[in-house]
Image 1 (cartoon, rainbow, N blue to C red):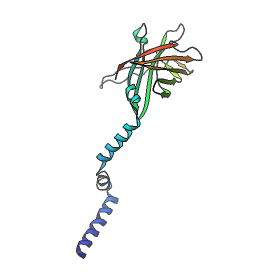
Image 2 (cartoon, rainbow, N blue to C red):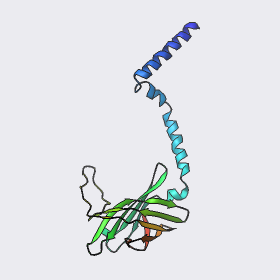
Image 3 (cartoon, helix red, strand yellow):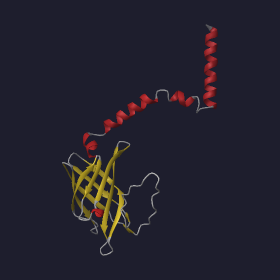
Image 4 (tube, rainbow, N blue to C red):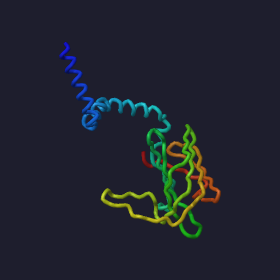
Length: 186
């Protein structure tokens, strides 16, 4: 019996020395032994934090204009169990043409029937910010041609396949005062 305890003691001492000296090979695998089950439990607890409305709102929404290149898009998704969004829009520069921007949704709020967010300072470009590149392609470097510093505030109501938004801006930077966005992708 004493010999078995000595062997177990020696093995534990060797293990801890090796775990200290070679943590990548000994300690980490031992610590991660049950990581799959822990990760699955973590994902389940995070899913429970999002309610059904949050999950249904995830997708891509479009406001259609007369010229398709001037359409506005809103992307809504989750990151670390929080709803986040991105707005791709256009702004009329009053005689200099239409400029494009892409900005995150700030102060994003969603309730059962209402949605609200803001868009902050925007870098303006001649071409759309919503571009798709092949994996082998490198994105082109483009320089902004202007800056719009005013905030744009949106609020509105959820409808069956999207939402109707009212737009407010101190210097009339809204494309339209009332806009209806329709879901085009889940």
